[in-house]
Length: 163
Image (cartoon, rainbow, N blue to C red; front, top):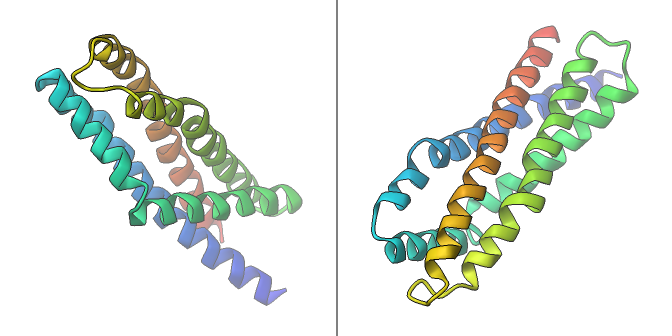
């Protein structure tokens, strides 16, 4: 059992660090990146966001996105399986909140908007409508991701402290 306990401790630390990185990325977008893109000329903001969406898919972000999701899913399952342990509820809820509030929200909320933006010519006739729609919907979803990551991080740190 000592090997399992060490594995869980390492996984908790890894997840907490990765979730913290993700919280920082989403926080930056919520607090200043999207506002910066909104105040520049529309086509410039759209082109910049289209570029960000393309570059991010080929960056270290993707590895952190998926490994943090896998780590949190594992912690949610392990926490649920060992409910009587002192740190189990923090693991279960911290991992589960991350999966729902970050992964699912990204897949259901942000990615479809990113895909729609990608398919829009920033200088075309429907650009203005698309950009307004994108900004009004993408940012609230990102706030959900930011807050979910922060709450998940707090729960994972709490689980580490319980160990």
